[in-house]
Length: 57
Image (cartoon, rainbow, N blue to C red; front, side, top):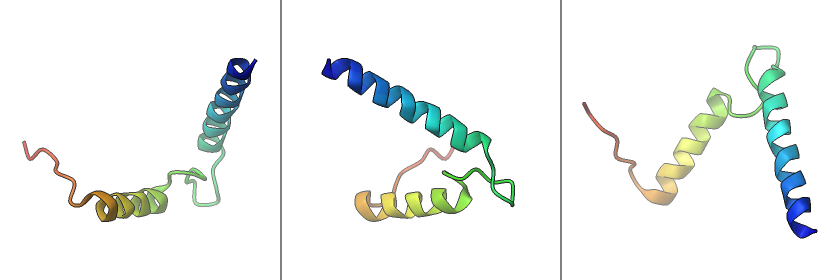
């Protein structure tokens, strides 16, 4: 019973994420994970984990 409930919650979460990517604000940006949110997520990752190493090739 708990497994079905968790599966339903995960399914609804994925559907909500897709809907939020489809519907846009006035500047034609998605409501979640727009450029501002990605910047702050990146800054938080740098603060928590130090410099993130990327490939240079």
